[in-house]
Length: 454
Image (cartoon, rainbow, N blue to C red; front, top):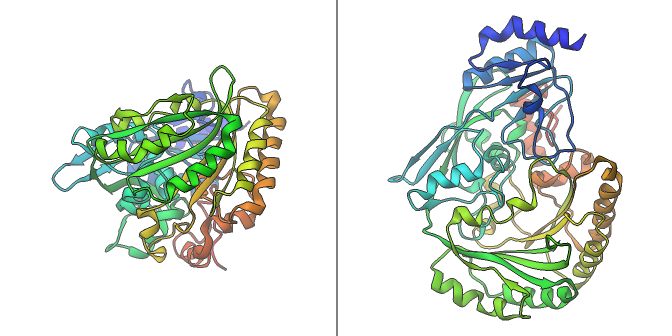
């Protein structure tokens, strides 16, 4: 019955679209439903494979006319799986991949289907880059709209700090631009809570010169974790904005328990060698994989650890202090991982991301020193309960040692209302008022949702 409805909708609406409308009987439907997190298994009524902002406007009109729930897919990398809805319409932007670089103005314009690997490659041709995600197959759209942490945030700020303008389609189907001078209040909201306010169809970013980086992984035995954390905490106190580090509890491909530090130095290689020398000598490490490389290589360092199609569940918080108590809890949690593929990460935050005035945009979390991510990853559906329970239990044990704030891009779909409020922090009330202006019926609700203010 539902498939019959889907076919009827295709017949009624396809002439309004340049791209195809996919019903469940279509050969491409199953692939279009698949996203990074293999736990997400949903069957939308229809998928609109948009080729332009005109298609996006038509899809919004379709959803409103047919009373269909609406979700938006960019790169499809969000762990919550909000990109794919059940029994609704998916606005699929993954085919919109145009990129244009202006090396003279150091700006780049990219469509929402672009992945960070594609974005970085286009910019690197001109020796340019900007802050992007730490996995190259992440989409630019979702990461940007939720704030955007990355290896260059100490030197150049968050992803949203480098966003100059965004084109979007509103809940009414209107195509508009938002920037510091055009619809500035909406632009304020798009940088940190953007999924609540419209469908972004084009992004314009600031680029920065970056000929290369000094980057790689230092690996230590897990039983050295407490010692390493003590050293790392003192080491970071004197490091420049150019250096970004991530502390990681993980296992080697052959299953050995280790603790590592991912380092990326975005500055002159000789200076990076001097800065990193104490960290590289400590231990010494079991392996020192740090070397000069292109930024595009650095962006792919952990790609293989988080492949598309595995099952993921994520719990996170911002952290003020990398304390011994927190380190002990994380070490014990790492030792109890039911899956050897799971990872615990502590992303360093400093420098430019913390110097942007907090009131400048909706992205709220600039005061923390770290972001903690507990990432359960496994491959077999029968292991869902054990891995989800591990992540939740470890997260609960960390709560006395972390901040209540949370990064929206690292939240799962089952977060309670207080956690969603914590994701938007001090900006929540202002965002709810803006939601009432731009999306009063809450059409865009399949996200970490901000209901419109009554």
